[in-house]
Length: 270
Ligand SMILES: C[S@@+](CC[C@H](N)C(=O)[O-])C[C@H]1O[C@@H](n2cnc3c(N)ncnc32)[C@H](O)[C@@H]1O
Image (cartoon, rainbow, N blue to C red; front, top):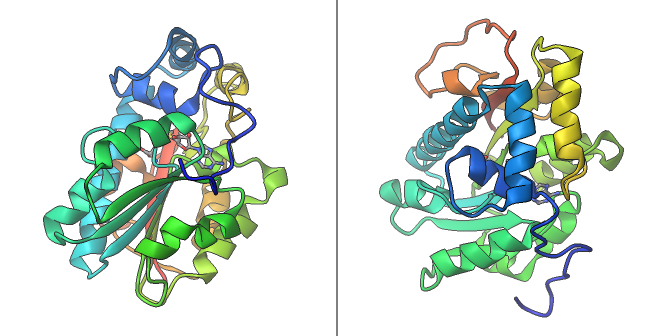
């Protein structure tokens, strides 16, 4: 870790559940502790199909990155990248564009440790510690500036992260600040938790499971609120739909939003 990287107020603590490690647990990974599994199990008890939409979210990542790369994007920023798993952004992008540049950004130090180990020796890819709630610091980060040419199109991914940005932190302002820096022809892909029509008890159990994590809460938002993050972009594929239904070739349709899950969309900045 370079001296410029500010350590967060918390460090890798196996007793405090981490949303990155809980996500790893849902995906069947090994980089999680008992506290993460306990919190994850409480969420799964309330919403038993969590692992299904989490896996679908990884397929969405693959579809979105492939589409962007085929449309000529050669550089990607993945904010809230999570612990490395299979088919990370650089592996997907570099199948289409072998020298695609990828910057992974996450505020969980465990992501930095595992990411740096995975990426050691890859000159086109880097992982930095950064916080989405401080978008200017992310954009100005030395390693971001070294990899990304903001005069050219960028593929910006914010998958399953914005629901960890609480309303008082101004998620709309944050997304706007990031978008403003992107050149015309850039793409924004996002997925975001929504509560569907699950019972208030189930929603409050999920929120209380996440309330004990370092992120502090998970904030499900309505389709309208999520859509607002992409205002002014040209939506690709089906528009904003449940993540399991998003492919680049799916026609727009009116989704059934009864189940809780992630809503996903990809927008092109005109
Ligand atoms: C649920 S995981 C999603 C991982 C990956 N984006 C995906 O969709 O497969 C959310 C990630 O966002 C990170 N995260 C949460 N809040 C963050 C913040 N304010 N800044 C940066 N990363 C954050 C967590 O550490 C975690 O790794």
